[in-house]
Amino acid sequence: WKAKVEEVGGNIVTDDVRFFNELSAVGDTDGVLIRVTRSDITTGGTHASETEQEKFIEDFTIEGVKGEHASLYKQVDSIINTLKSNID
Image (tube, rainbow, N blue to C red; front, top):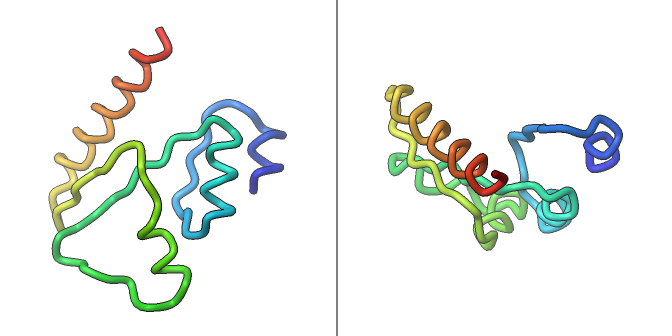
């Protein structure tokens, strides 16, 4: 997907970064890593695709709560505003 990002350009969202090579591709394209967590989900399992990403250092974290979408949107808006202010 890194080649596709470079081809398309602009702002792109990927919803699944689980391995260090994928994280590296995000960084190589000046991307931002946002981790979404939920306190009621403590683990995704023991497969490498679940455990490797636990070692990532994210730029932002969104704390999700089951069924509370307004809070999720508010956190996303805050991150976008922060990123915009860093560009100006």
